[in-house]
Length: 123
Image 1 (cartoon, rainbow, N blue to C red):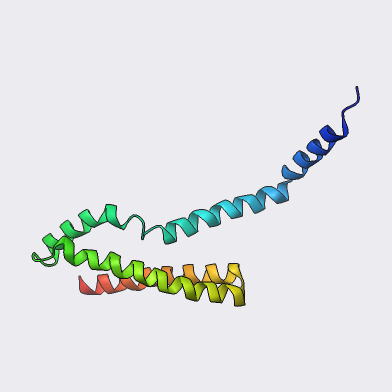
Image 2: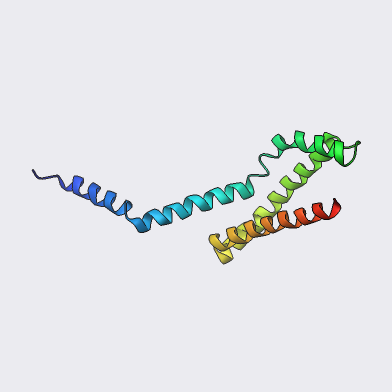
């Protein structure tokens, strides 16, 4: 029984996709996407965490802290994101998307580590 040329081409594509080297590249792409989402997703989940942060800071840091105080953090973060998007676009044209993404995620991750040390020094 002979298969049509289209069926053979489709089968050849499926074999190429199932190649182990391509699977590894696909896994790297998925893991990279998850890490980028975890790194950059904090801005979009800030509203959900704000209730807990205000409650914690009200009890343990300063009883006069309100939602209005914490809302400034989200507002400034959103403004900074808009400003740095322009710089990121310019950097991406010069250095390429991979280096730009690596640099941006590294800066954000280092800032979290520095914030952790700052918080531990205050305790």
